[in-house]
Length: 294
Image (cartoon, rainbow, N blue to C red):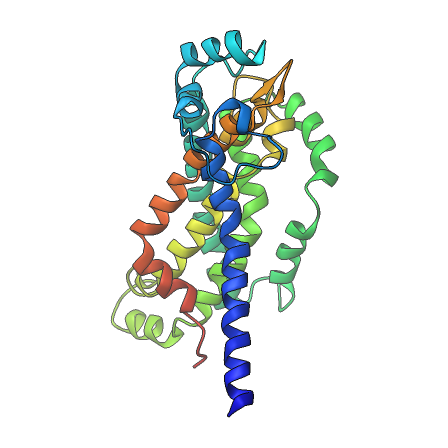
């Protein structure tokens, strides 16, 4: 009995400790975003500020607030910081949304072909996945040269193409598992009753894997929204994503503006949270689909 009580206590302690470790970065992000300038990098650290302020959020969205802050505290700011972050959210929303849609659409078609027609053989899905195992830094230099030659650098089309290419293997791999668990017999029955292969896919299979597709879309959207390397090397000022905007918050005299970066980081997580909340019913179903094999 004593051993069971001790084991239960240790398990609960481990769970609580794990939750604290997992949630501490979120707390620190939110806490830093409302700290005044002199508490951003104070030592000892200020765990909970007694002088909360929304100045960091005003700097993110209002150019005049950024200029006032530069004049009083930071000395000078990068020229990109002086502008509003609205463009960064607009660019990220356009690129991430379109790239996610393309990745999921092409991934669904490719996964269906692999599952139903055994396209490429048994090892074909692994060949797709190995593309994503390659570190992105290994292909950045040739991509910069190629995009410059095709005049796709610093354009929406170029960024969407790059994001789609590097998330497509994930889409194929995830959606493939959902299609495998959708009974092929239902498609066969539909075709016996007069449906074409395309009609059976759209009217029978797609509704069955809707949860899996939405779960995949959320995962791909998070990857696109948080991508930094391609946005850094394939753009030069016309396109600014939220990750680039966070990196741009630097003062010539004070270094990184941690409070402003924290505010931008806190705001940039809202689209992902809202998207996940809206599709949570389908998300749970999609992530558990296939957990029990037929």
